[in-house]
Image (tube, rainbow, N blue to C red; front, top):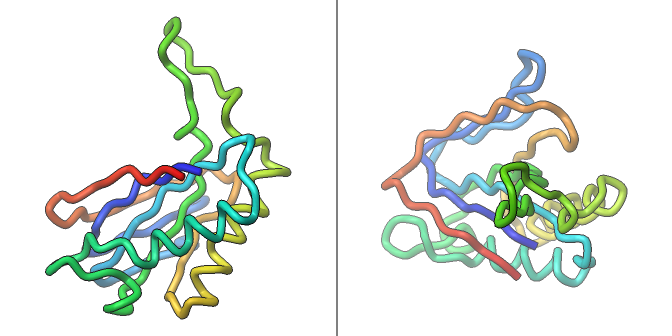
Length: 141
């Protein structure tokens, strides 16, 4: 599982002119990709890592501050570009495998008490964010 995590002051996801998820205060925007070999245990570990990641101001985390997260599925994080000019998607999980794992990350975050907004799996989404810093990290399990 792989996530690009940006510290933001606000972020939103729009699908067909409808805002489907938004955070209007400092928190984390999480672009989340699922690998073909990922499982529920890895999804829960990713949720724990995201919740406790100390990249907010003053080295705080969502767990310690209650800051919100906006989680957006992003299969393109597993695009392989080393050969040729066209990405290969063989490492990205198929939707039937990926969607339940993205949902499990969100569910586990919520079980931990996190405030979570989401995009819409498989939809063409417009993601807007105001990066804070900017401060962006790659989290890979």
